[in-house]
Image 1: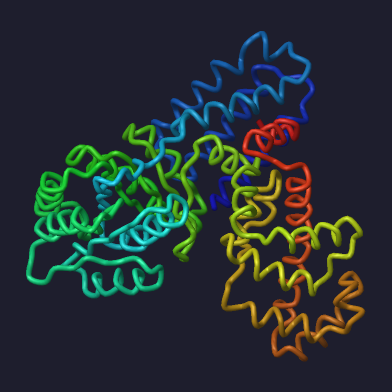
Image 2 (image 1 turned 120 degrees about the horizontal axis):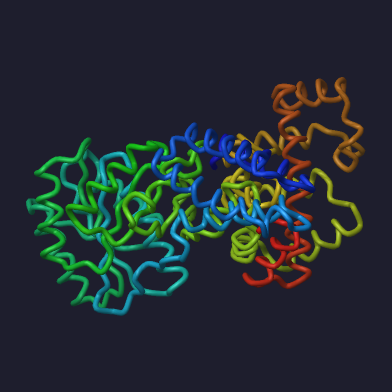
Amino acid sequence: MFGELTGKLDSLLRNLRGVGKLSEKNIRDSLGEIRRALLEADVNFKVVKRFIAAVEEKAIGEDVLKSIEPGQLVVKIVHEEMVNLLGKDTVPLAIPNGMPTTYMICGLQGSGKTTLTAKLALQAKKKKNVKVLMAAADIYRPAAIQQLQVLGKEIDIEVFTLEGATPPEICLAAKKYAAKNFVDLLILDTAGRLQIDAELMEELSDIKAATKPEEILLVVDSMTGQDAVNIADAFNKQLTITGVALSKLDGDARGGAAISIRAVTDCPIKISSIGEKVTDIEQFHPDRMASRILGMGDVVTLVEKAQDSIDLEEAALMQEKLIKSKFDLEDFLSQMQALKKMGPLDSLMGMIPGMGAQMQGMEVDPKQINRVEAIVRSMTYHERHNPKVIDGSRRRRIAKGSGSTVQDVNRLLKQFTAMQKMMKTLTKTSKRGFTGAAAKNALKRMGSV
């Protein structure tokens, strides 16, 4: 996530932190580099201009220039302004209250509306323990209804369909059905188009008028950069959307859409979709996202994911192994299978302060777990428990024995090293009993905020 931008900003801010004395020229030169990095990341140029001006106004002052650690203060100012840019406050989705509460999901074709509908449904079912109904109102895209039905079966949530009806009729019928069957949350998966047109907007306006949704959530593909901002602006003017959901955020190396949308449209970003699995969804927190973008990590979200996904007894055993420095490749294999439930490894590594820029491009592909197991099982007992002894000749032998390549073995060993660091971080947070506030304090102690 934001690999290219995070790498550049992380390097720039590291240099600033190490400066014991700053001048106006130092600050302006650094801000010039930040400006270039943001523009290259496809951030709206007006947004960049306002951001740099706000940072410069606060950074070039007597309190900063004459402070004991001026570099740290400038970094703090950059972080605060990035949080303001992303929306400052976390804006949650409307809480289901049994009316039923209705979410209307809209956006262009290919933005990820149907998948997000299922993700939101599962999240509400698991975390809020409410009864959810999904309505298939996209009658234009081939197999759209079938896709939602397949997802509904996978997550065990009912899908409402109505043959021969228009999308507004389907949505209104779904709301009446939901009310009769004591559904707490109704999610409407509406149709999209390849581009914004009058017919699309009229249909969505009719659905809005018929169902009076508490949430009108616009799904935008974060990888479209500036186009995502323009799409959000157009939909907001027509429908007055209540929030934005950024899809495919895990594949966005630049970050232009995420940084620009709130500033341009004034619509809060409420949801981040960070992977292909139905569990890969997060509430959008401006302060946490700002930390990730600037290479400062996101310990709070990392701990929350760990609490949801890792078995406590197993974690205790791993903690003991880590304390005794006995975490080996067999443990790595079992933990890869556990971490797979938490999301892409590159996303998780980006939550550890200072690690995001170093781990660009790394990800755990669930389909490759068998290959990883084959590689580990092709090692000797000594190699599995002492990975540092695996030199070039051993790597070639292991690759041949597992039916893989030397590159595959190298990648596995690199992931093992990353896993050791991640597990140490999780162990420390678990041992200290971190809450969200405690994790934020940890970030401050690390000089991240």
